[in-house]
Structure formats: C-alpha cells, structure tokens
Length: 267
Image 1 (cartoon, rainbow, N blue to C red):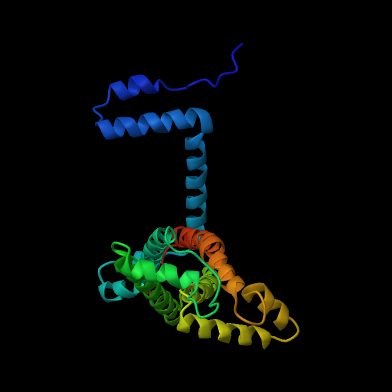
Image 2 (cartoon, rainbow, N blue to C red):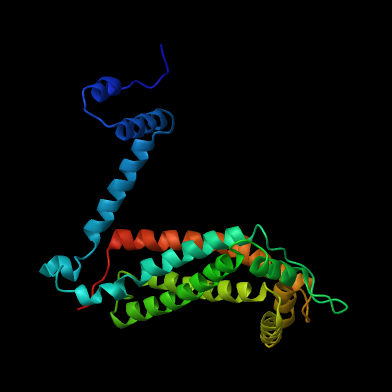
C-alpha cells in the first residue's frame, strides 16, 4: 500500500494538450511541483474562500451601488496617496539598504575629530560614485512618504472612511503614521552632524520630561542623559533592524484589509 498522495488529475497530459507558451509552461510546472509538496493550491483556495466570505459581509461601495465608476475621476489623485506612500517607502527601503553598505555608525566627536558616522556620510556624498544621488534619493523619498502618509490620513478623515467597518484599519493607519515619524527622526540622527546632534539633544530632553519613566526612556533610547556613541548605535538599530520589519508587517496587514473591504468612496 503506497502512502504517496494520489494525483487525481493527469496534469502532464493536460499541459501537453494545451498550446502553452514557454513562460506559462514553466509557471505551471513550478506550481505543480510546489503543490505536490506544500499543497500550495489548497491554501490558495482557502484564502480565496475567506476573501469571498468577508466581502459578502461588506456593504457595497458607492461606485458599485450607483455605478459611478466614471464620476469620481477628480478624486483619484487623493485616492492614490496610499499607494504613493507605499511606493515612496519601497524606494526609501531600497536606497537605504544600498546606503547601508557604506554607512558605519560610530562614536561622537572626540578631541575635535569628526565622528565615524559623519565621515561615512562625507564619503558617500563626495567620494562614492552616485553617492550624492543615492543619499538624496533616500532623503527625498522619506520626505515624500511623510507628506503622502499625512495627506492620506487627512483624506481618510474628511471622507469618513475611518467609520465602521473600517475603524480597525484607521487605528493601524494611526500606528503607521507614528512609525513614519519615528522612522524620520531616527534617520535624521544618523548623519551625526550639527542638525542631528541638536535634534538628539531635544529628544533626550523630551524623554526626561516624561513623568516617572523619563530617565528610563532616555537611557533606553539614547543610551544616557547625554549624547554619545550609544545614541547613534541605538538610532541605527531602530532605523535599520526594528522599524522596517514592524512597518512592513503593518503595511501588509493594512493593504490586506483594504483589499478585503474595498475602498470607501466619498458620498
């Protein structure tokens, strides 16, 4: 008696009888290979069933209910802000990963010598081929992301898209815009120039002003009550190793909920 899973369909014969292109044949072959080992198709069917069950419970959007697909063209730029901020995040992530090959977090100023972090930024901006372009691309994509996320939240608020049944995604959006601000602040400190130093000093003072746990927060985030090598190291770890994973996961959940619920058009 064989324990091998029985193939209910003769997939090879089926593929031979179809006029498939090379790309289609490779795709189906890989899919069948994975399905026989990991049951990929079964999980896809489960996700499809879940999607339709959820959508059946959702009210129709205004454009679906009143067939107004061609009537909201003037809203499209506002409704593209979520996708625009996601694209800016992807550009910032890719450019930031490339910058990570040349950036090195280091100690603060010592005996008048510039910091290792500042030296690495100077090398990127002046000596590295296309380094000025790469850092500018990272900086501008981050700024565009902040602006797009802020405008996206305004659009959601003023069009009432935060109301039931989309209140959970509104809360996730609030968390995402907060993470975007933290992203910007931690990245702002990494060059370790004058702007970064005084922005870090403001952060220390704000942490110390928190009742009861202020000193603990300052030591955790900034490595003490004064700026040092630990400050840059902590900002680097948050910016590169913590925030990207948390933010990417929440963005995936956020987009998944939008995909299941649909977009709430304005009245």
